[in-house]
Image (cartoon, rainbow, N blue to C red; front, side, top):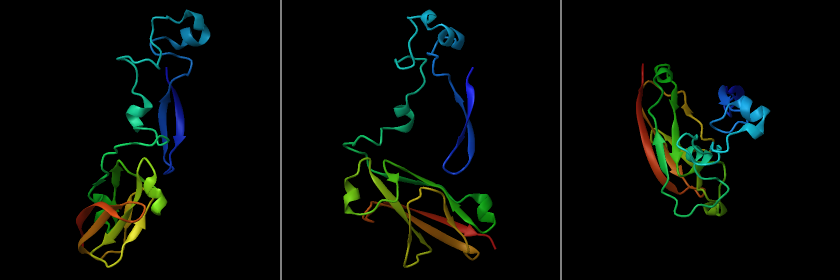
Length: 176
């Protein structure tokens, strides 16, 4: 039976996840493999061998290792959700986003263009302002203090030299 493991994520939220004992190959009982390894059925596939019953690999879930340079990377994508309705009803704008094929990190400059997998950050412009702010946290965008009425937030995905790769505009109404 899996044990429970308590984990603290970057946002400080506690999560519980199942942890299998390390000494248990897939398809054997933990008592059989942990107490008497010689009794493990040699015909049973280990967790490292491909099997229709084996769990997905780390690469299947997390993608390629960030330690290996990628060739022929697909173009970066920016996926932006509409503002969270509960916060918006209170006059606060919380916009969640994610990227594909680009990691959001606080690294800037010409030298960072050679990093693989690709890295970048976002530029955020509120209501056609002549200025924008830069965010490299990868966290939810929060805008407060807007007057009631229609607004828009332009979110631009940028490379480490601030060249815009792609963008999305979110339109919303702050209730009065």
